[in-house]
Amino acid sequence: MYSAGISCLVELYDCPSQLLDDECFIEAKLREAVEHARATLLEQSTKRFHPQGVTAFALLAESHISIHTWPELGYAAIDIFTCGHRAMPERAFHFLVDALQAGRHTVKRVDRGTGLGKDALKAVPKPLEAEEAIPV
Image (cartoon, rainbow, N blue to C red; front, side, top):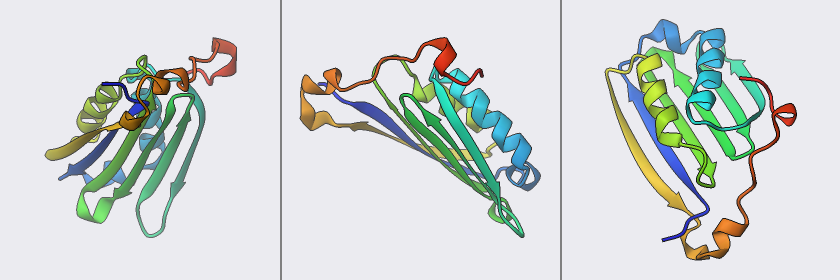
């Protein structure tokens, strides 16, 4: 079966609230998750909400990783979508489960674009040259 990419929808529970509310920590762990996935970081953005919570987004050449936190609930929702066969989204999700110290988690892996057949492989972008990417 051919696919354009893979989405991993990850839910983390029972995480320490101080980690989930630390914008600098979430930003750093997102960058490390990109590295673990062997993906190419193009841009990164984070926003801390008041009174609590952080949203972080990494735009990748291969697609994206997003993290949304609810410190008051000890909960984080993570979406990792990569296209092509070079990036490894599962490695990013395992890293984030450990980094955010989740007491428990769920993950749904979804193959994307399976109806495209072999044409899906033609549409996948090639990894960027090192000078085009943000160093991780």
